[in-house]
Image (cartoon, rainbow, N blue to C red):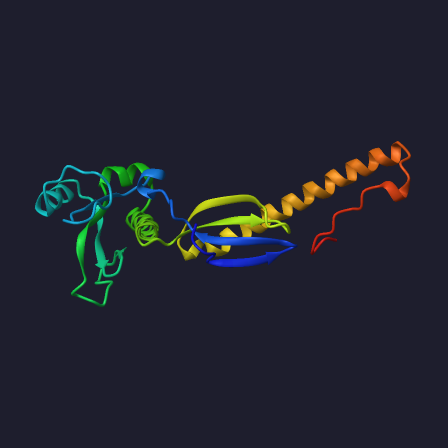
Length: 214
């Protein structure tokens, strides 16, 4: 495991943020709406396809009246992907178009049967490219909760991109809150039993103390 990307102290626990070294390919892990077709001599990118080349692909897109966006790859000390109706990278030497992401007109109509579907489809595809870029550029994270004794209590992985950082931290904090609530309830239940059994006060277990407890 890599060194911690970030450590957050919360209610006596540590939430450690790590880069997810075993992140799953979102094109396989999830059910993407768009089809991502790429051609590159050195990298296997996007979805599996049977297109022989860009001319074959463009002919198909025209026949299917597909909605599509170009995919650009930046290859310098790692790779990153972006899509734009303009040109997204400033360096022409280490970047260029590598393929497209598309949705056929029929599939778009099935998903959005009413109204103007084009902008909705474009927004979904842009989000899928952003997620995929996080994957290929190693921008995927996870959290580990550690108690006062340095013991790992729980973890969760597969948060794609810095845009999910706040959501990831909030999720980890909610898990800490849940654990504290569970421990406090367990102590209360145990205390009730001790009171029922007339256990002397000096022998009763002290309540756990947590930061931020009311």
